[in-house]
Length: 95
Length: 484
Image 1: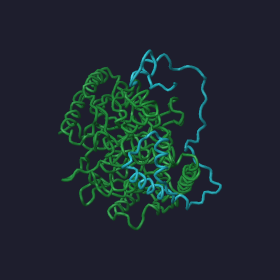
Image 2: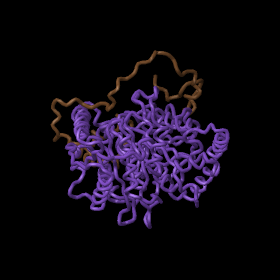
Image 3: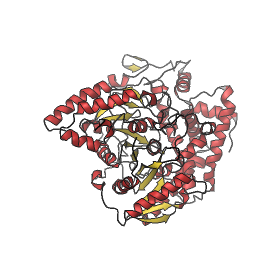
Image 4: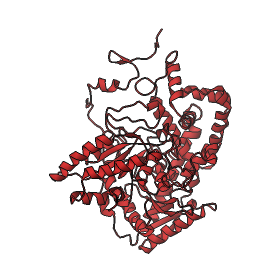
């Protein structure tokens, strides 16, 4: 399943990345090399095989739904590129 | 003794306890070595002053006999581990101003055991790479390089190079597809990726969460046991960390391996395998056999599909994990007209080429219409790869393979750079282990004809690191590799 320029542009937008127009051809060809390679997996018969999501066979543990860490908004905001009044600042999103 | 940095942690601890040396002297010796070796580009942030302060505290503890397991031992920390109030970048431009407000569980465990941190170590950006050349801070130079600067391996290239050049007593590292074992092999040091779930992933910058696992890189097998003992254990902050008890791994070092069954997988020996690598593999098998182990031939039929499986699953998980770098909460922000444009500008400027490549592939294989064909398919093949190991471990106790099919190559090698797949192929002997969640160690076996280190890998059953330590110690003695 080779991808075209339009697909590369669409995937890049989904990932919120920009592919410069002059790099589009190279990106596409690299993309297709990798896809052709991983398509070897098509040779494997996986009928009735359950996908392996995690190698961990232990059940996840439950815990009480209680606050164990809180009142740390200062720490959370410490690395924010922009903050005001205890909030993260983003460009205007509602007209 | 010429230099305190020549000895292992085990030897240092006995001298510290006997008050033959002091933690301050030991720390100063490593700082001196570190200052002499900036050319390797192993460290990207230094915390030597803090380490010296802590060494004075350690001295008091030795004086009043409250010394802990790693009291006063100077370590290097891979820059993927969050360290409180110490810059943690994952060697990416997008995080190059990030100062964590909390400590990762693994580094906290080491601090609680009395270890000191000399600084943060270079690595491939977000641990994506096999040569440390994708780091925003430039490649690490392999201390074994002759005239041409060679790669230290990746992604934990800084960790392996720093241990080899004695710029720390040992280092933390992480392994998603071979990132502890391949650089260990390339730099002639010893590293273990424990079973998935052994070490908490809390506070480790995430790459591929179902594969990532932390472990130590050390001067020898004995030190790996000492370090892993202190790093491992259940942590409520990581739901995938295991509640299984961690046995004292040091107790396995020196144990007899009579009757142990060592499997040699036929699929790891294609016709074109590098002759030196193959002959060292035979030598390693012979050493274990001479110690009383039994060599048996096994099959891991889905081996050839491990790399393509990995290069679907790891990028898919990475594309999800790296969605958090949005220029809003931490890290780089590049302004744009509106929120979407700000995301795009930030991420395009902040990520390097290899990281972007993997995010794009990951986004594609998870996107509507392709999820079943790629991602689900890869998860099914992952099951078959794990089943292969389950079958093999009915016949043997350990699996012996080379760590890497190649010796360290030149920085900027054109063959590796012209096609990303050529670089990916170097992980051929290591990725299956991550897919199956198993523990595996790489230790040096000897030098190539070019005088460069080659490594052997021992793979164990899940949660059976102990048996790896038993055999690795015997193999280390038999190989008699001379450290730098």
